[in-house]
Image 1 (spheres, rainbow, N blue to C red):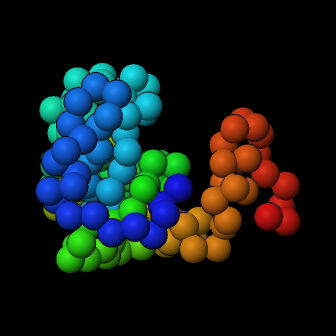
Image 2: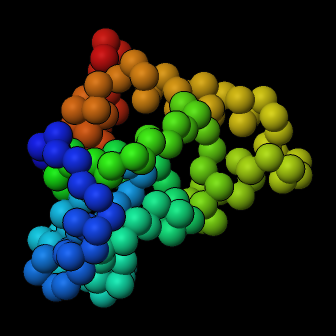
Length: 150
């Protein structure tokens, strides 16, 4: 959990080895030392990123909700002078294969059109804004359809 502490890139650069690995994503300084062994891409992917601002690389491979999922647990502070990257609510990810290609603008399909994309964006905005994260997690973990009053 973030301590509210502010770090410089020089501070972060001192933590780039197995067992002591920090990275910067967006404006967050994350201690990924313990998480590294659980990283789906392997711990070496994080160790290569250790001690650096890897915001661009992260967003090239991950959707924004991946950061949102882990930031509370891994954040130890913020990077001095860095600004939070604002993302559009309900936006379709541009990360390759993170979304089905028919959701991407410009994709032509006889089955999906702009009204489908608009509905998907609306529903995503609704879930992100109106449903508390704990409720969404509980629904996903249970594998059951939610009761009507959420």
